[in-house]
Length: 80
Image (cartoon, rainbow, N blue to C red; front, top):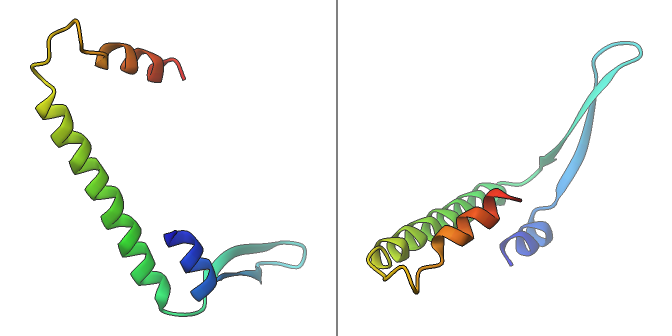
């Protein structure tokens, strides 16, 4: 949702800068100032998700091994 709003409000534009006779460099740049707010919003959302995941892991630290699946989740993520 954040990225869709960012694209609609302040889309990125491709800017190419010549660096020599036969070479150039290009990058996407935002023309407005709304990109700062959207970057902060995405950063805060990611940090909140990380904190929530750490909190849930802390709450689940003493679950009996019979019900704990974190080992197998870690193994499957490591295999990816």
